[in-house]
Image (cartoon, rainbow, N blue to C red):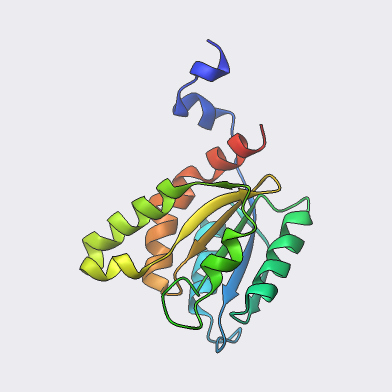
Length: 172
């Protein structure tokens, strides 16, 4: 069977077992001591066998967010950049815009699935999330809300099950 006709199961069988991840918390107020979402993401990724090759907290300023993403994507050890925070609709929430301009490919299915799953937990407020996923420089870029519950949902239901497969596909 050619790879074009390969099933997702076959793709996953050839995916890396561990992905190097860089975690970015976007916040004007979080510190390393109060960054519960960043800590939760590190914990879940590590428990799933992935490596956390770096993490940082950056203010919700598009230029700063963009700089951190570009730097992370330049590191050979990084297969995915996972951001938390700044995805809402307040005047300070600019993560979506900062990332949107950097993406070479967009994976709108991630945001759609995340909001669908969120709706089951929090109802119509799920529509306020601008969670997104895409590709830059052969890396997966994913942006999650700042809520630890939202991060847990996204990682457990979407990212951890598919991260190796995503990284394999984007590297082909």
